[in-house]
Length: 237
Length: 283
Image (cartoon, rainbow over all chains, first blue to last red; front, top):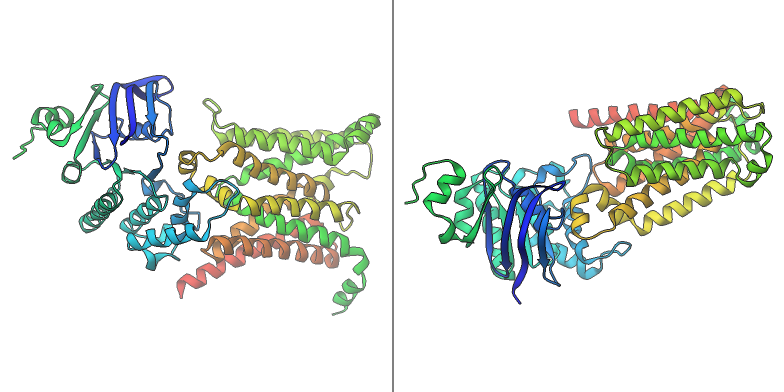
């Protein structure tokens, strides 16, 4: 079975107050999903429901037995008072496979080193995470997600705090990781161009109009749906 | 020189308090790193006050003739019980409706502080002076503390050695810890219970003020000295020991209150550390 996550008639929201309902979605191995929507549209709530960090208000979320998440959160969420080094940060990605009370084995440490290599951050391993630039932070978080050897990579605005060059590097890295490891990717972004360039499947979500649309890129990227979601008169040529 | 030789010759007087102080400084310095990094300094202030309240309550019950009660649960047991209940409450209870977490922490601190002063006023036994409970005793410690405090410190340290990666993980990145199905509530409770345990035993011996100072200031000073996590723990332990030892030394030779002396020494180290960082970054 290649189906990793399945949402059936799910309503998302907080404290029994649904703001988008009747969500049906199936994420399979090797798919690249982009999540688009205006600010405050419920993208992050959807992401957290899929990550099982919050429960759906109603409906059911099914997870594959061997599902391991690799999660790249927004980098601003980390408290800079913690003097966590890049190496320590990437090691935390491995904790998905190391139980509480256990230490990382030599194999775990090798995987951590390999993840830093593939993200091109080995030279930063002793630097403090909080001292890095936006792009370096995102690459560190990506290395951390890869270190857990996930079968789905979930990224929350991975290019939000980086310049154009940094954005291209991060997206290239995500694409390489997906191709090499045949991962499913679910990426939230504000940027229609980035998402449409890299994804093969799209989700459009807007809580104000209680609308949820998902499908292949061609199915979703229709002028009508984009005009409706973004309130713009877009030219798709 | 004369003062120093007088101090050394009085070895038998300060040996036990110095051991207790140094061990308390070390373990409070270590645990203080979590307290400072998690930005819960006032939880530790509240726990020390609640611990003092437990000690005062026990002496009060003894004073009004409830000797059966006090022999069953001595000052340490009552203080430990109340401090652990408070620590578990702050670790497990996250949602306080419209009130912020800081508000509830302040409530606990104020209630315990008021309670200590009221009970202190009612304690009949002259030996249990309320200022001793709050600000630390002079140079005398209960002989049992010489064994009890190192024993509790070793226990807390071993627990932290086993769960080091987990305590750091749940403190730094709650969301990923939840995603990886780490037992967040249990780990947070265990972390704060080790703090409560250390606070309960050391408050009785040293007083609330120096224990609070040793939990907060060494870790804060260390943040000025290093940007490496493991070194942060090492520096904080060293500064904790140094503050306690120097505090006892100056208390002895200048005849000043020990608790206040430890607190001032830790504060001076904090100022020096801040100065060191300024110099380092201005060069």
